[in-house]
Amino acid sequence: MSCSEVTRGPHWAELRLPLHVHAMLSYFSGTILPNLSKRSYFTQPHSDIALYISLSLKRYHHTHSPIMARTFFVGGNFKMNGSNSSIKEIVNNLNNASLDPNTEVVVSPPSIFLQTVRESLNKKIGVAAQNVFYKPNGAYTGEISVEQLKDSNIDWAILGHSERRTILKESDETVSLKTKVATEAGVSVIWCCGESLEEREAGTTIEVVSKQLASLKSHISDWSRIVIAYEPIWAIGTGKVATTSQAQEVHKAIRDWLAKNVSDKVAEETRILYGGSVNEKNCGELAQQPDIDGFLVGGASLKPAFVDIVNAKQQK
Ligand SMILES: O=C[C@H](O)COP(=O)(O)O
Image 1: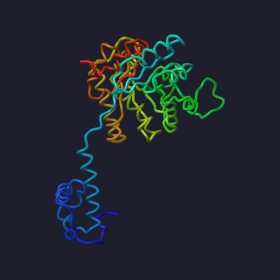
Image 2 (image 1 turned 135 degrees about the vertical axis):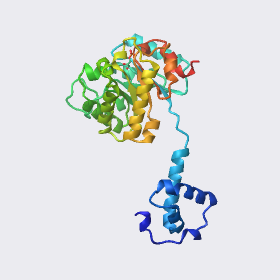
Image 3 (image 1 turned 120 degrees about the vertical axis):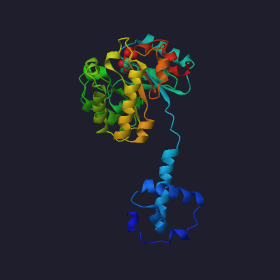
């Protein structure tokens, strides 16, 4: 029902509204409901004023709430590396390390080690699978289901990593479907995107990442279980890290895309990680960028220096 359709209720002047509410109503009436002039505010009945109050408070809250700080996040993607003994060593190292309590940490061993790592690792550290299939069970040789992950207390998965997109030919559609099934079942996802060297040189980085995001958006509605990892393919395992300004530029573009295509809230709250040759030396400067909310670390997550990357925010 529009304001102009409201005909019942006492005149606003009969209401005993606090002065600040009146002031706020006058201030916002022109911006929130531009089709209603200030004059019409003074002539609207009770239920209209209730509508004004509700919209004004909503607007006031939106524009005056402090921006929710995003918890810094560091993921360690072991990829297809490690043995029983080396992974035990990594777990012991993490269990005994002094980790920044303000950083969320998730490690992702190969699937054969998932359960052992989950059982032996400090419970404050999350454990992620490196893949999950979109079917609940059945004849899908080599795949692993969301229910199986949950049954083993694994509540994270890395999806859309460029190595799976390129080597294993996973399409945007497949990655989006997997992400939908995982998040809907309560498994959080580190969702990866990023451009190849040819795409960067052709100047299509933002276009490529936007297309990957658009596919994701067409499959999911709840973004609260998603952490985005921007990983330029040319920087993965090459020792060629993106410069802080290159990384920040793409992270900002991803956040702008979320604001424009999903919502301001999702844009503000979604963590965007950088991945690609991150190490203990380059992480400090990257961590200072306003839109870099953490890292997805490959090679360096297998080394003791991973602890320094987790503590990147504490570097001077
Ligand atoms: O998932 C991690 C990324 O692929 C980065 O790997 P990297 O740190 O070895 O370059």
